[in-house]
Length: 290
Ligand code: SAM
Image: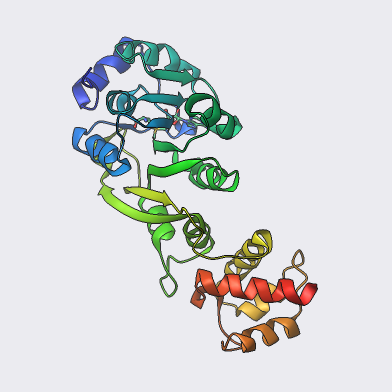
């Protein structure tokens, strides 16, 4: 069946029918723009073979579009008040499972196994912005089999995910995301496409998971520890910020030696290093420790 939600009139009707009260703490901003919804489905490349995990279905607006396009959908919603609404708005679809849970507590590996025989799923969401980073990093770090993650996020966060060295938006999030995926900003979305309107601009970003990692690193955890330390104090040199991180235990001398081996200045800042260079640096530290 064709979607019926995705416009202000039908959204208001449902909200009034159930006397729904928006919960600020859950980051509830529902989409009311059909073009944006179609664009998200298209960017994710959702087709009849796909199984989609939707995070935070709200009243089921995007869920209707997903159910219409995909083989199956599992939608995880934390707010108990939305469950009876979803039962109603999704009643025309027989390929949707609604799960009333906190997405951060769901074992998505198990879900992909049960629903899609462990084959890669697509993750599509208009995310609750307060937990964007834990959701995305959780998906990557627990190695959930995903083809792509296509999500609405805060505009600034989308820009940070896509940024490269030399950009002011470049940081630990850029490197973490780009280690696992190839980011592409699909569209900027203004506040008037949501009800209620958020106070920030939004963007749809697609993170296409790498089949082969773009860099090989001996110790992933060490590399990300070094990355986080280098961006902790942006204006300090890599040598200062990394050597002062108590958890890492890397001496100034070793850092200087490694930078020299890599042909980099001793006063270079973390923001000037690419993912490849962070991997190389981490490998040199790892080698020195063995
Ligand atoms: N998908 C709907 C739409 O586009 O109209 C709603 C999007 S709204 C920005 C975010 C949704 O995520 C809300 O329905 C909210 O209740 C839900 N949510 C917030 N925190 C959550 C969590 N920890 N786990 C699952 N869902 C959550």
